[in-house]
Length: 348
Image 1 (cartoon, rainbow, N blue to C red):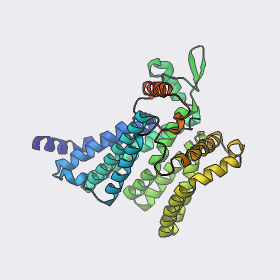
Image 2 (image 1 turned 90 degrees about the vertical axis):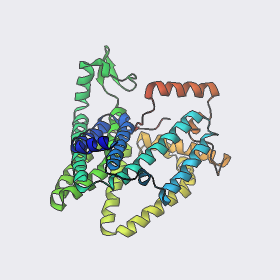
Image 3 (image 1 turned 180 degrees about the horizontal axis):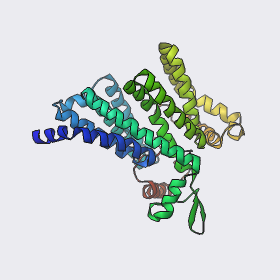
Image 4 (image 1 turned 60 degrees about the vertical axis):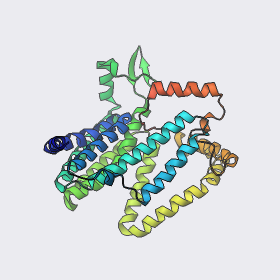
């Protein structure tokens, strides 16, 4: 073990630079690999911390947040037992628990890294995000020309399902918008950590300059895409950030309040939106119209099980027979596997 620890520390710079550059880059370009990237990052963070003599128990030491998460996880698994789609519900709960524990453990491990290692990781992370964002911007601006060229050059790289693709004489002419939407969604989630990391790493003057460039590139990419959720998320995050600069405490408490009120009033608001025919409003994008319908339908099921719910992943299965549910689950496993995938629009 000591030899392995010494070897890991000796190779630490190369390991950190490689993984923290390729990890974000691969996750941006191939969103389905996000979970695999997170697993790899957690393993490396933990190994390098343990190589420095950190007690393994310190990585997952139980505190109040972790205890509250444990209660939530227990409820998710209990809820899955009466789900109409138990396999999907248990799988989702398991992934949720795994991801949260890995993120928690990685954060604890990073707290034991020396400043030099953290700086290397931050620099590599920013480089990966920057290259990935530049590529996605190029793809959005050119109609996915690079990906189309790859598909034509290496047909084996084409996805199994060409739903939403434009195909002529067996050749892909246009890629489904949802393929880019997944990349845009991951990019937006990585944007604010990257911006904060950039300012902390480069200092105020250079940091704000480069952060502004990254923000501009990400914003251009998002608005060139048709991913409406990311557009709303970007605008909302900018508003919150601007408020937090001038009124940090007020903004924090306001976010807590809005979050709690959203849980308290989501059912009547969803029902009211549907009754107001917002699902047919031309002022809303198609994805928002679909969400109004889905949320209203889900709200109608609440009175049937107001306290414990009807079971995770049950809403879409209510009107299906048991055999059809199993068939749909097997089909999903064949086409998507167990990887996480950002979606550009909900399934109606």
